[in-house]
Image (cartoon, rainbow over all chains, first blue to last red; front, side, top):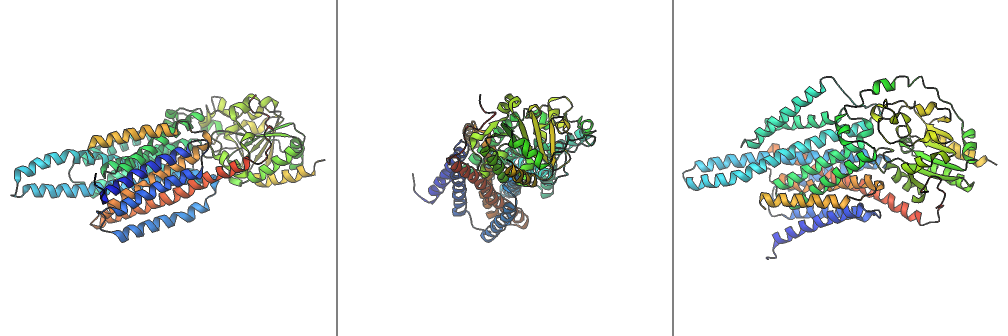
Length: 489
Length: 109
């Protein structure tokens, strides 16, 4: 084995792949640490070093550095501005970026390949070595075809990831963004798929990838990804993000095949595997089949379910009364939801819980697997606030013991405590395993809005007899509860 | 590498990925998803290679866009992943502090 520059480059790529695997391993164990993230970063840095050290890297060095600088710096401020609680929509954004980058790489490769093949045709026409030229041409055509297919598929997967992720990003950032179901959706979708399939085949077999053909194919793939996610309900966004993460991984894998980079193949495969597994786990934790999420034939009843929402009458409660109920309870169960994340009231909530514990109240948090925007969203926030793991119970355990709970304190949660999910008219929520808060002796709900969660389904819990609603921003409500509890006794 | 070598590599790496994250607790789903979105930032290397080989305006434009997007993917992905993971570390450190362990009305029976 020669110990030359190329050997070192191969070694660098190999070590990079090992770093990525070890980093992901570290993050997926219960004792996850930041070091896992650093290992992945090290792997990426090694890959970059290899790319830069490659002898073929001659042209456009200034352009490369400028583009890296612009892209890398442009993202820092937006990321810093988004609170930790909304990390999931940033993940959707990164999937869109990675997918788009992979699609662009594939299209440049396709254009380069077509230029090369055209040159090969010209060469074979030349008088010199006609026979050998044809022979080489056939031998070279087979891998070229394979590489063309991989490029086309990479472009397709990358564009789907970009389009779909952008819809997911928008749906999670813009409050009014809801699932869209327009008439003749199926027809438009199938027509779109047909265009993608046809152009894809043409691009795969044709030696010359015309830029306009490429652009139309990319646009059709993008709109295919967008059409895929438009009808999907907001509550199902966690599944969707993982899905497009998998698509981005697949695109990177295929790109790696095209430009012959083992590190990219390994990284893409890892992402594809991890994301598709996470997608299945997330769907399962929501008690929902993947097919149901994607083909959203259900949810057609949601219009009927929303009706009468405004007619709901709720029983109000003020801070003083709520503080008495909490302060003199034996057992309190806190059910946080997205409202806690939005109002950033988790620190204050922990303070309230501490106060109650000092009074001898037993307090536990129950975390619904899909509370917030992604599984684990609430865990992250409570960890930030310093709530110990022993205080957190699983939803199924909480439901089993709900009848012994004196007060269930719902903080900015709606869909995950909506009893309508257990009926047949729960619209998008039907079948979702919910926390049965209404079986607690009393329920206090801190909420800001009008009792319609992200799924757009009215919540009968809010108007039940044992439920009291404290209106207003969760942070303000929790603060006034703290003040009132301090005044007890 | 030949076409089949690449397929072997992809297949084995996919299986490795499944085994790696198979038993991930739901608490870590968000961090792992963030990490996965960081890992596909490796496309930056591909974008650099492609841009380095570009010799006309359109490939340069597309390649430059790819490099910029992939860089944003890497930098942003790292910031978010590290931020999420640091929360868990902080949570763990506090867990070792004296905390009320048995105040759990609905915990395991």
